[in-house]
Length: 134
Figure 1 (cartoon, rainbow, N blue to C red):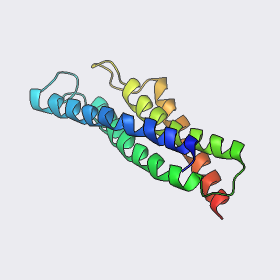
Figure 2: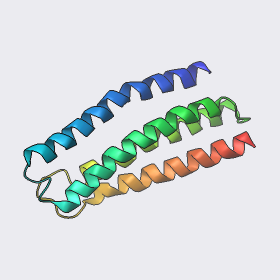
Figure 3: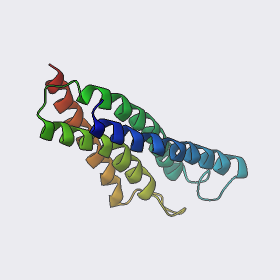
């Protein structure tokens, strides 16, 4: 792996305990009947989605780093591809969590658009990577 992909993978690996901690936190909300979580289906659903997307997208980004170095993309596009793919596991969960940050929120705020931005980054990064591998 290139030094850039290795350092990116290192940062991604460091985030895994944070994702695990988030899972423990959500589990504790369930076990302790924390107000604003169990009694708020919108918040509960979005926070579960945020946690799930964080875990899956971090793993996806780790695997993608192996392929970025194998692609025929110029170095500048490899850097952009890495950044786009890594942006998804940051932006999407942030949008899910922050859009219903207050326990009484019954509909997402405009911060939900961060999830869409993360989706666009994921789509663009994987499309670039796929083309670079052909």
